[in-house]
Image 1 (cartoon, rainbow, N blue to C red):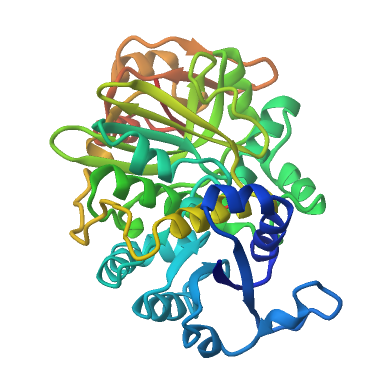
Image 2: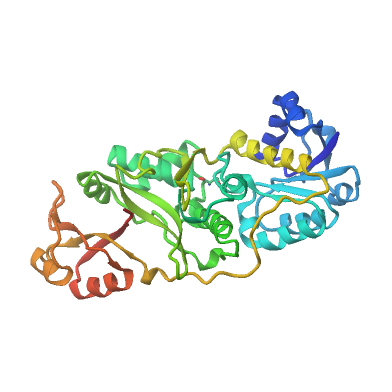
Amino acid sequence: MVQIAVFGYGTVGSGVVEVLEKNKDMITKKAGTEIEVKYVLDLRDFPGDPIQEKVVHDVNVILEDPQISIICETMGGNEPAYTFSKKALLAGKSVCTSNKELVANHGPELLMLARENKCNYLFEASVGGGIPIIRPINYSLTAEKIDAITGILNGTTNYILTKMDREGADFEDVLKEAQDKGYAERNPEADVEGYDACRKIAILSSLMCGKNVKFEDIYTEGITKITAADFAYARQMDKSVKLLAMSKDYGEGYFAAVFPCMISREHPLYNVNDVFNAIFVHSNMLGDSMYYGKGAGKLPTASAVVSDVIDCARHLGRTVMCFWDEEDVKLIHKDDVERRFFVRVDETKTSPEAVEKVFGQTQILRVEGLTDEFGFVTPVMAEKTFEEKADILGGIITRIRMEE
Ligand code: HSE
């Protein structure tokens, strides 16, 4: 039997206990041993809950118990999760986590501690919730050179953008409705400003490069400036707007970013709607592959944590390989990356003729009901060049990057 402890009995932590209970027999078979939750670490007590007798408030009880070989860290945030995870790994206990913030901040260090102490630091649930993506990158695609990862990695923003597209509604209205229904947090900043997706693409980029991509270096733009008018133009072009998190190997360096993008109906991520997440991977032998499913939620996320627990139980005393060195990657600046841009301009300040003069031949777009403005799509150009030309033109209402 393998005995484990759950750190944090919130949504995901209680989900871990539920998944282990519901699928007990099958999990025992697949792990080759029974997995029992011996402790739950939380500041609170849970009277009436089946785990009430297992609750402890002092982490040292768990860290000093030689019977515990695996920890599920489902606390979230940096501290005390960081200190607890380090201590657990130093004591030779494997840690399975859903904590994207901690993984993005301290992944290489915690992986090294796991290697040095012959245990594991696994984080399948930190990106894409229940969608298997870490294990496919680490195990299944090992014969591949991955050169691009493009993901919809945040369910809240995908829900908001899907509603804006379907209903022609504005951002603030949809956000409020999402909050009322409990789909969006009361403080939605981490989601709508792209910070959550940034942590997740930092993790995926690091696994793609085998080196450390710091989340602070990733250019991040959220969806708060996207409007119903932007979607009206997008629809006219048979496109939609999605918050994309991307990582690309340009040969001379890696680029990683999070920003809203216009994508066409043919793009594999176009039909990823509502709270669903998807990760579209391009690698040099397989070509395209895509991983789709529920990127958040109690049981999907807990299921991913438990899959890591089973992996640890199968590899007790051995570290499974994960290539993520401490060396930091210097990313290509967004200004040097080439793409098309969709632009809306104020017609009282500029004209189609001026657009042609500055940007060359472009198709002018007009949307019924939107007076005193028009839109256009630029040729492919470096972002730096776009910014220079945009300054010369003037009258720009907004610009949205386009992904082919
Ligand atoms: N707030 C996140 C989302 C939860 O909306 O996707 C999962 O990390």
